[in-house]
Amino acid sequence: VDRDTILRQGQTSVAIENNHLILEARAGDQAAFGQLVAHYEVRVQRTARRILGDADEARDAAQEVFLRFYRSLKRFDQRRDPLPWLYRITVNVCRSLLRQRRRQPLARASELGGEGSAGMPATAPAQENGLVARALLEQALERLTPREREVVVLRDLEGRSLAEVARAARCLQGTVRSHLSRGRLKIIRYLEEQRGGDR
Amino acid sequence: MSCENFQEMLALQVSGDLPAAQARHLEKHLRDCRDCRDLEKRLRAGRRALIGLAAAEEAPASIRSEVLERVSAEPKLVTGLLPGWRTAGVAAAAVLVLALVLAQFLPVRTPAPLSADSAATADSPLETAMTAPDDAPDTGSLPPIEMTPPAAEFSPAADAVTAAVVKPVEPATAARPERPIVSEPASPPPPAESVVVKMLTDDPDVVIYMLVDKEGDQENA
Image 1 (cartoon, rainbow over the protein chains, first blue to last red):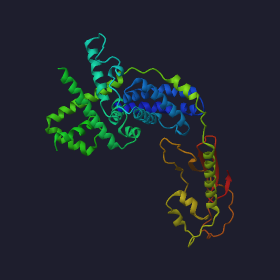
Image 2: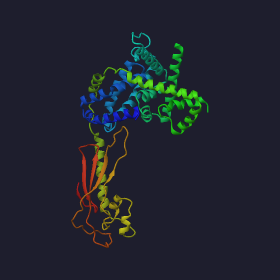
Image 3: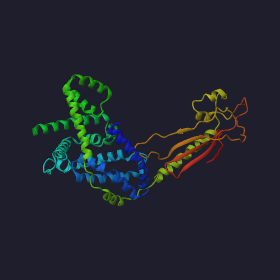
Image 4: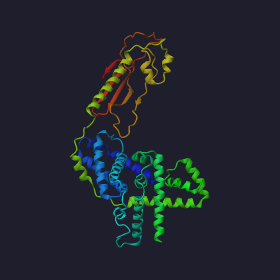
């Protein structure tokens, strides 16, 4: 049983438990909706942050995602797992924000990764290596096109299946495969360039 | 095919996202190509690093209070079905009930009276129950029939009638009145068999039960 299967099974069982929260939220119980937010907010914020490359913007985006989710509650089938729906809204909101910006996300590895390679505190070598590796990965992700970044984030970081990624990104699975393979190859090449340059 | 053509395949193969036919093709190439085997290892390491990146990330600060503040400014959600949909749902249920009842009462015109054999070879038990003349012999107990609606995706799954479950019940013992357009049965008619039709609507408070026997005598609605 691989990681993705475990993730999906766990999330599905939690989704079943959340069914009653959706019903209560739909009936006007804001505390129930608050519990739903608490359950999914980390994944929504993390995904938005990776796609947008900006923690503050991601926070605003996540709020918008949950507001749209709330508005759609009355027509949402409570028997379904809300997570794919939330990913889909997240991708839509992020695309809107990127269009508004009309620019690619800036490389903000130091912000995203906590402490990047610059301004790193004194740490043990292993931890230092880990932080540098994380910072490089952050930079590599930010050099992808928005579409490539969406699918890499959803497939590799969030562990969604190819079909789920296609639904969230509203495209065919073949298109997801193209973006995914190009994105992964770009990441590997970038990491190798950086390591080669350091030597 | 050059190694460059296999690189995109490799990038998908590391997560099992490559279609099977291409995966077999790639497998053959990997046996003979050391560079591609090396790239595969690096791609796997890169993917592991990305997965680790998500796991190592600190949880962002909660946005729950901000969301709830914005939600409280929203107009209240309409619970259940919208009025129009509710009306449509009830209307659809009423039409279904009417169709079931009429199907029992309307005369069935056939070139020749159905024989016991022809009734018994109907495609489905439901079809037998709906179309066989009153004197058709009992073809056995009617098995439960479930009519499940197609799953909807992220949409109101069932705005009107969502399911109808037909269950067999004990046969009625009362004598049935004679009906026109039937031939005399070869043997005395079997006891009537009734079914309970339960119709669920999207509104959990609205459930319609109806008891109908095969001859169309609606006993309760």
